[in-house]
Image (cartoon, rainbow, N blue to C red):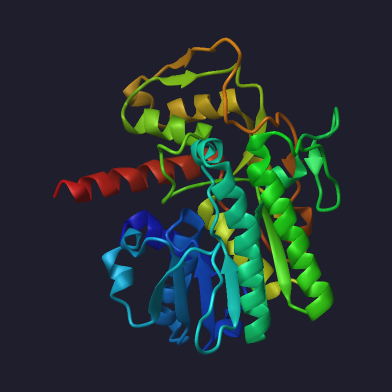
Length: 350
């Protein structure tokens, strides 16, 4: 296991989260090969290794070959090849459901808006239905900052009960509108059936396991630094975002699932608030010895397929009140991500 990945997992399971609730339980994770799903899955297997929790993990994904061999060969992990947009029928108990299956790449959202909205709407309905049928103890839906849309002029923060504007007739809204509809489904299942459904709204999350070719700006910057290329900005870089390292995000997700009372929480590291240009400057500065530069190449008419939101920072005040505290500043988090990528590259060539 990659050293950076293992260090992250070990730090997560040392958090003061009520892990004992998972002892002897069966946990279904959809999107188990994605960045978030991979971390969520491996936290559970490490809890088994370190503390003998006896957690049975159901790893659901469309293509089982995307999981590493070390996971495919484990006795405590059952791999289920299934598309969440289709009805789900599983034998035995399912005590917790973590629905993390959703495209996150702007390239996919642009080219496959139907598949994107289906994963969040049909997928959420099918997983909620399963959780209700199984009498699940907990259900966690991985939502997004994008449900808030564009904030009002001068609005800096989004709290869990404040919302901006989303144009539902823009095909790019397949992601944000799909997440919004899924959240409403969670509320309905909680109200009508008493399902213990929770919603976690993630800000821009990055770290080991993310693709550096998925079209997001942070991925493009990582790709540049990884390949010793200058960073090219396609805009002035004034849009402000918060970046949350994956290990911090996952500890927040498990805290919401296992240690929260309310239904909806933001997960965003306000200390990771930077403009796109500032992020590029930070990335260039991670390895000053490489002498990389920041270059501007702004196309006429702007860029296609990117989120149209320029402001709006997630406030994590509510989550911090129940004990969450992010550990990784932006520069350290991206340096860890680059270290992970370089270790992976070295191992491929051994």
